[in-house]
Every structure is written in C-alpha cells, then in structure tokens.
Amino acid sequence: MDARPTYLRTRLSVMMFLQFFIWGAWWVPVSTYAMEGLRFTPDDMTWIVSTIALGAMVSPLFGLIADRFLPTQWVLGGLHVIGGLCLILAGFQETFGWMFVVLLVNTICFMPTLALANSLSFRNLDDPNKFPRIALFGTIGWIVAGNAVGWLLGETKPYFFFLAGVVGLIQGAYCCFALPHTPPKRGVEAGADMFGLGALKLLKERSFLIFAVCAFLVVIPINYYFAGCNPMLAQHEWPAPTAVMTLGQVTEVFVMFSMAGLIAALGLRNILALGMLVWALRYLLFATGAFPLVLLGIIIHGFGYCFVYVGAYIYVDKWAPRHMRASAQSLIAFLMLGVGMLVGTKAAGWTLAEFPAVVSSIEATKVTEKASETDTNAPIPAWKDLSELDTNHDGEIGRAEVRAVGDAGLTVGEGFPKFIYSNKEIGRVLLAADNLKTVRTRGDFRSAVHDELTVSRPDWIRAKLRHWAPFWLWPALASAVVGILYWFASLATPEPPEEAREPGPAEKPRAEPPAEPPPLTGTAQAPGEAPPAPQNW
Image (cartoon, rainbow, N blue to C red; front, side, top):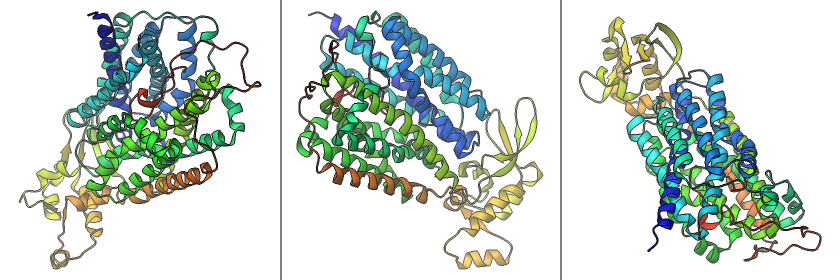
C-alpha cells in the first residue's frame, strides 16, 4: 500500500490545524481584552475586531502574487512569519493606534493564507473529495486554541497574542519546509477575477439579486456576535468565555456533514432563510441574560453559521454559470467577509456604546515595573478579586469590610501591571450595586438605618454589567426581518439547479479556463468563527 497519499494528507491536516489555531487564539478573545484589559471604547474595540474585514478586502492581491510569481508554500510561510511577529508585537501594545496598526498588518498577511491553504490543498490532492477531512482539522485547531485561551491564559491579559504569534512563526517555518512544492500558475489560469467584478452581471437576474442583497444585509447583525459575545460572557464573570464559545464549533462539525441531506430535504432557499432566523433566535436567547439559555444560543451557532455562510457558497456554486463561478464566489465573499463584516462590526460598537453599565469606570493606582500612576479608567475588580474582603466568609461584602481595608487599599493582579483600589472607590461601586437591588428586605432597611449595607456577587456584577438585553434585541430584529423578507421574496424564484447552468450565447467566454475544484462548497467549507475566503482570493 502506497503511504505517500496518507503522508500528504497528514501534512495538509497539520497545516489546517495550525492555520485556524492562530485565528481562534486571538480573534475571539481580543474584543474582551480591548474592553476589559485595555479599557478601550466600544468604537475602538470594534475597529480592532474589524481588522479581519479590512484584511479580507485586500487579501486577493496577495493571492494574485502567489498565483503568478512565487510557489504557494513560500508565500504562505512568509505571510505567516510576518503575521506571527505582528501578533507578538500586539501583546506589548497598550494604545489603540499602535494596536490597530500591528493587527491590521497581521490580518492583511493572514487573510490571504486562508485561500492559499485551500488552493495548495486542492492542487496537491489526488481526490478533492478528501478535502473535508483535512478541513476538519482546522475546526479542531480552533477548538483547541479556544480552550487553551479560555482555561489557561484568560482574555484580559495579552498572553493569547504571544501564543498565537509563536504558533504563527511555527506555521511559517512549517509551510516553507514541510509542505509540498506548489509552483505558481501560468497563463489564463492565474488571471482570476480577484474581486468578483465579472459576476456583477449576475445581479441582473432577480433570484441572484435577492440572494446577494439579503446575504449582505444579514451579515451586518451576524457580526454583533463576533464583537459582543465574548465581552458579555466575561462581564457576567461566567467561566472561560473563549472556551465556552468553542461549543459552537463542535455543533458546526455535525451540521457541516449534514448539509447535503438538509438541503435535499428542505431546499436551499429555505435553508438560507432558516439560517437567518436562527441568528434571530440565538440573539433572543442572549438577551435573556440567563446562562443556560445563553449557552444554548452558543451551541446552535453551527446551524446559523453553516446555513448562512456555507449555504451562500453552495447557492453561488449552483446558480452561477461554470465559467463565472469563481468570480461569483469572490463577489459574495467580498460582500459578506469584507464590507458586510466591517459594517456589522462597527454597528455593534455604536450600539454597545448606547448601553453602558451603571458603573463604567473606577479610579485606581496603576503600578508598573517602572512607576505608579493614577488611572481614572482602571478595570473594575471582579468579584473573585474582592474575596479577601469577605472576612466573615458569608458570601457578601459590606461597607464595614471595605472600610477595614484602610489606606493601603485593595491590590489586584499578579506581576505587572497591578492595580490598587482605595476603599472610597470600592465603596462607591458597592453603593451603586446596593441601589440596584430590585427587592428591599427588612435586613436591607435595618442596614440602612445603621449606615451599613451588603452586596452579593450578583449585585456587584449587575452594577458593572452593560445593558446587554437591548444590545442583542437590535440584531435579533434585523436578522428576523431579513430572513422573513428573503423567504417571501424568494417564493417567486426557482430553486438553484442541481447542476451548474450552462452559459447562454451572450455569456459564453471566448476561452474557458481549466476547471479547478470549487473552494468552499458543501462539506468542503473551511471552519472557524467566520467563514474563510474563496480559494481564488
């Protein structure tokens, strides 16, 4: 038995594992780190998250270089080395400007590697139908990275940047020295339509126009999830937010391999509409603020992601004439992963800014290796950091226990930086938390008379928690409206054909380029929190 194909698939699987490990290790927790660790504004935070969308918009240019001038494995290796160095550098940044710059350089380098990794796999596999098994290791890499960050490193320190950066450097060396040689393409094969402009003529057809408009519009509320879910979990002080969010990828694996049967049973148009409504449902679950329902909303991520993103790529693959398929995939990916993601992420930031917490800032002394300074926007201590104040171990902290801290204050943090909170500032948050209690008891009244009050963990968290319910209701409404509009508008349009349409006389190209396996269709969709770009990017 020839072991060479198995050895090749093993090398490609390792490549996919590392590829999505890098992405999952930093992009999921970065929103929480920006808001809770660095105290960036919601607008600044969403610019940081939007670097992925900005990188996706320019990534086709790097695909063109790889296709025409350099071996694909060298381009992959070089881009990962630069991206890995940028991620390590990002871990040392504390200001928005420099953080944005280094992460933008990273994503400009990283986003092309998604398509290049797919392209390299397809060009070296003897059977393209084996690609889903390779792509599965990308999902596994994302899950492993999320659990490593969630359970070991945390989201409020920059350690996840260092992990992602080191793995990026490893991936760079691996691509250069371990992947099969994949020479540049030549002639017409390398002249792919990078931005999908050639597919604009498809918008003249009513069915494709309705699909493209709704696919773009629904991506806007979808990106509220990527910007808001991790910070919400962290602010509630629920365990390991990044690890918990990987439950969505576990579901995604099962849904991915069931897509063919679901499409056959329900029809592709209904799958797309149902996917849009799933996003509305999960946002309603998030709005409840109840951990079991929020957890359910995370778990059904696989249905929303696969039905919308994978369904969109399958729709394009079936609807577009064969010679326009690559251009159409590029167009839809540019709308969904580029423009739609950017608009949606920024809209999430604007919405989040409208619903601040009751206590959104606290003053503390920030202690670094070099000096100490007053920080008027220090992180509000988590309940676990206040545990040493609970001297009677009754699960509540009272004003008397806060006063007992004295002039020394409460020191939070190991290593540098660390924060020292005065009893006056802690008492201010304590009073705000007490005022939010919905039910006043005889004990509360008695405490008020004697100038005493106590708060429990839920009271403290409520005071520093943003108003997440209205934040999630807006994208829930938008997703539902788009899903319902698409379903009704598509009733008068035919289902996409089972086989790609043959072009009409006016559509036929003069010379049809050699066929290449479609990059992202059916179960061959690459995994991740957001879908990867088509292979011709």
